[in-house]
Image 1: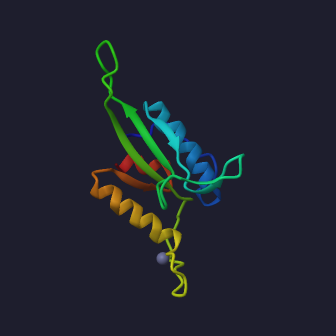
Image 2 (image 1 turned 45 degrees about the vertical axis):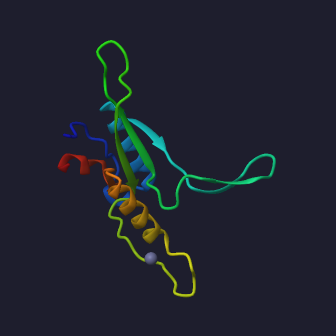
Image 3 (image 1 turned 30 degrees about the horizontal axis):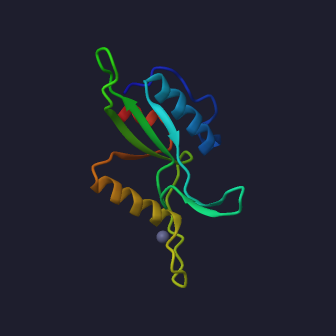
Amino acid sequence: MKLKHALAQKDPADRSERDVVADLKKFLIAKGWRPLRTQSGKFVNPAGAMFNVGEDGMADFCMIHYLPGLNKPVGGSLILWIEVKKPNYRPSCRCEPQHAKVCRMHRQMKWRCEEEKRGAVVVQVDNVAWFDTW
Ligand SMILES: [Zn+2]
């Protein structure tokens, strides 16, 4: 995919993860992808019941590109999982031996590994220009 328009207005060092998300959505929507933002964690509904949403460590976006049919939808699609990071993100482990739960970086790595074993494409993006190299 070739990025033909200048999405980045700010100095890359001043860009946040939110800026990268905005660029990413604009770019991929223009290419026909549908972005679905994911969430994971425990939430409480208005009745006070706790429930789980998503999967621990899952990517930030599930991008869907529906395959066109001739006269009607065929029901097929391409799926691309995207984990968004702020520019120049450097992963760091924050696991602590006394805690049973591993750090976010390791939960994300585990989720990605399991999803890729299922056949998924999962990418980590810190700059929409990354798609120029894909
Ligand atoms: Zn860790």
